[in-house]
Image (tube, rainbow, N blue to C red; front, side, top):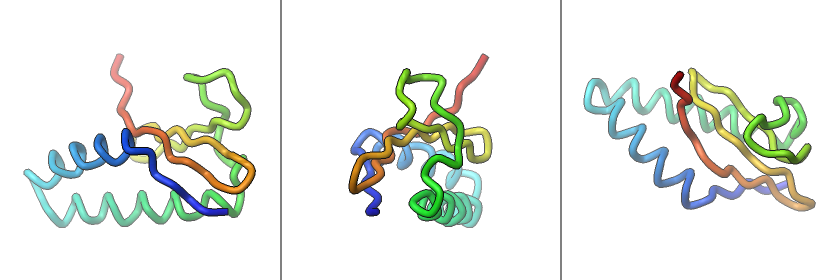
Length: 89
């Protein structure tokens, strides 16, 4: 299975990375490296993470990483990373 990144995810990730990098580029790069590793592991066990509470579809899952929610959809031949956000009360 291949992994694709929706442009919405890419746009929001850049904003998050830039925000972290204002404090420390090393922390921003570590965040990126570890998140990428988690995303790259999804094809091994695509249903490992919980069903998304934001969508009523068993093929849309939520990867939780350092307080961020990363919803992704499992399709026949690929996984699409849809978004990244931090939900605040």
